Amino acid sequence: MAVDVAESRELKERVVEINRVAKVVKGGRRFSFTALVVIGDESERVGLGYGKAREVPLAISKAVDDAKKNLFVVPQHGTTITHEILGEFGAARVLLRPASEGTGVIAGGGVRAVLELAGIGDILAKSLGTTNPINMLKATVNGLQRLRRPDEVAASRGLSISQVLPVSAKPPEEAAETTEPVEETTSDGEAEDHADA
Image (cartoon, rainbow, N blue to C red; front, side, top):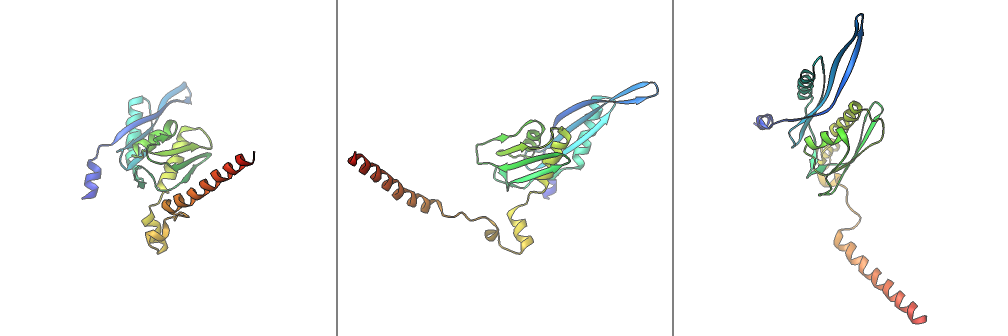
């Protein structure tokens, strides 16, 4: 039942790059076009496709068909990803880092297209390697595919979810209480210094 709902959700496509390529034959050069396309439902599913044909529209439709074969679900925590990860493919390395709500998608070019169509609203991304669009996008997809949810990690380790999630050093209330007296002693210290002067 859930699969039918996911299939019925409309997939949007975004052309990231179109490139003209040439094949040298006996009579000269034979030109064709390649298209790099990202498709996604802007909720959780996204896919990357690459197509090549003699005409641009045909290359795009081939890329879309390829992307539909490569659809996958991105684990999310609210509007961001579950944890920081470094995606790698060839010489491309893309760092994906969760961001607080309201940050937006901080990413460039094709990486932004993948993240937006995956339905991620707040994320920080940085390309650390080559700027080749195909490899950058494949590195981004590699990172997103390797993301794990807390319940998956807990199940694989035989632990509960609360044992897997990181625990902060102090709850926010305790931290606020400890900072107040420090500020008071600082202000007292300053007052004493002024009295001596």
